[in-house]
Image 1 (tube, helix red, strand yellow):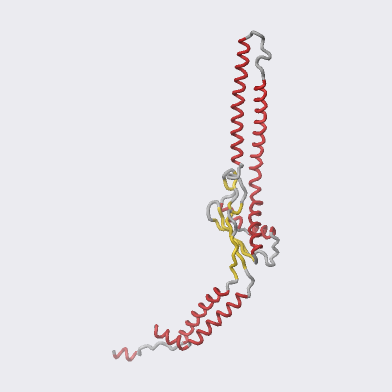
Image 2 (cartoon, helix red, strand yellow):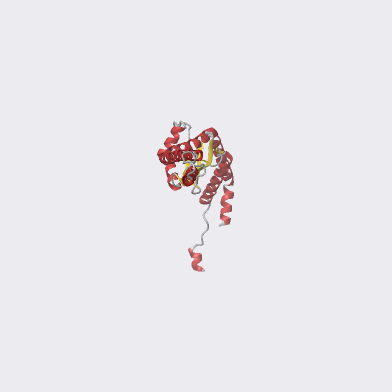
Length: 266
């Protein structure tokens, strides 16, 4: 079989070599004349509310890969279908991070498209974030009002003179009044400390470590993915070479088969 392959290739060696070179040249020129295509990749960290994702990762990836989301992204960057964003895809990497790949005609376009994707995602998730944030803000305002009221009570109790309305020489009444003011001050301080703790807890729930919008985790990487004429020419030449070798084998002389009479005599 190897001998047959060698004879077939030698018989059409010129055709195989020239055909492969011509195929490489055609692929090189065709790919070289194509418009450039750039790819931007970035990790998007999903938005969170009180330490919980606004939307789970699988649902977010499906939502971002949907046709309505793509249409809103195209509208956000002013894409009219004439040299705009070619395509983008979202792939979950971790429960918190998604890899977004955007292709386009130039570096500026793919970078702007990536930012538009993040803005569009935040716009869609704002419908889920807004009621929760509104409720937290209301609780925060009520807690601030309560703290301010307790602070005023503290100032009043501190400035109150227990002997002001006491009967001169009435030691029991004075002691009772002082005890009453001390108990009021103690209860007020307990309420004030609880209110301050509640305020801190609310602030932590709304802090940047637990409540934040979707954002790019790192700077996006932009690279040119097309044209790559040398790579594609080598690939096209390899395919042409394989096809020409197969053609040479199929069009070559048939392998000699032992005759029936020779087999019978044997």
